[in-house]
Image 1 (cartoon, rainbow, N blue to C red):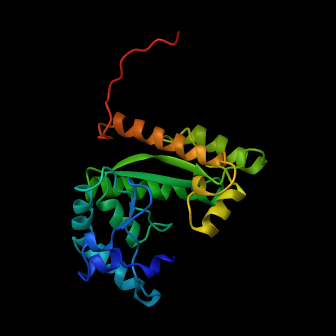
Image 2: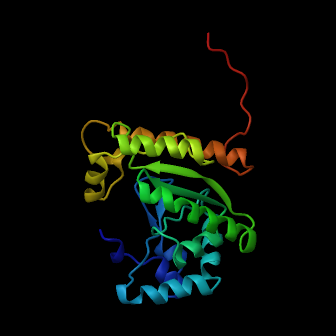
Image 3: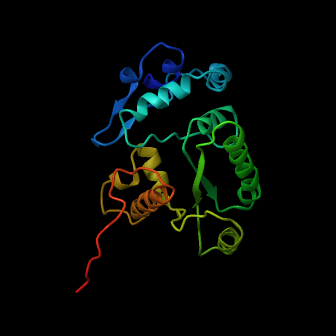
Length: 221
């Protein structure tokens, strides 16, 4: 189904529905989704202004935090009002970085905005890391960009997401990569590694992941 077929965040912001009314329970017990809502393209500007000018988003996120261990906000690309509003109510920011020249040139602007919001609007905001995506290490351009990123930027995650056709297939079918039929795609393992790395970083920053912070010493043999 298209996300515009469901009520969601837009209706919550306009007080036309409650969070409980709009949350969609997936077939994974630990995963629920709040869609953008039934938003007409002509109303996007009003939607952005509402996000940026009221405490409604903060109230919605606070309510969601009472029900879920993690609340993940997937924002549009760029640094528009929606992204700024999301950062103002977030504890962590994860920046996807395409392994392409233009994206690398723009990363400094993104980091600057995050730093500004942390200093002036949301002191709890932390940079969780920079996630390299669309990586093709067998291509000279992509390989050289990744070398530059690893050498010049702090906070680049060890996990990266490669460019692969399987992501297009999953997108067309509207399911996660791991849910595709047939042989389990090796690209899906990347997201398992990413989840583990992110949880470790959150623990290192003093956040709560719901797991024990210390593990006993174990023997291999």
